[in-house]
Length: 134
Image 1 (tube, rainbow, N blue to C red):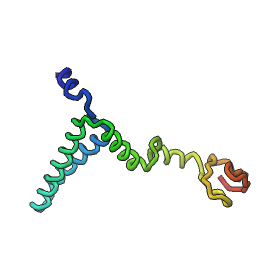
Image 2: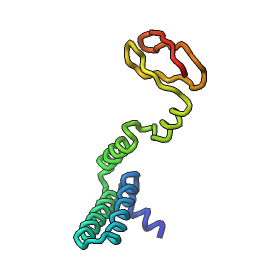
Image 3: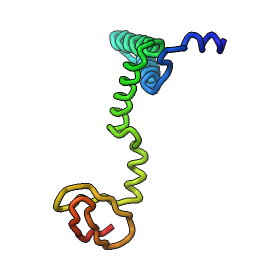
Image 4: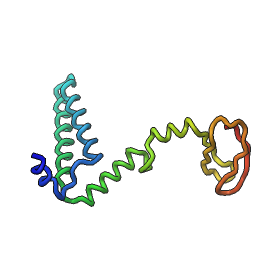
């Protein structure tokens, strides 16, 4: 069975993050179709479920790898807020450890460690110095 699946997916896109998100979306639409009180909404959610599942299958079996990878990268950049390596959890963890200031002269963001008291901050771009409480 494994060899058959390997032959099927040879040279194809397979499963990536966008396909996983589409699959989860299809499941959510399916659950919404089960629990929607109105018949019209039930049919709408069921149709959206089928559409998301079909798009997921088409993407997984696609041989146009470059296009599918571009779609996945766009999805990841939107989902992660435009920063490929920084998730919102990493940002929140840094907010707990560091205090972020803007330079009064040039406006660049500066990060200093929390809990150091009143410190003198030097801007790395314009060289301006100012005092802030961390």
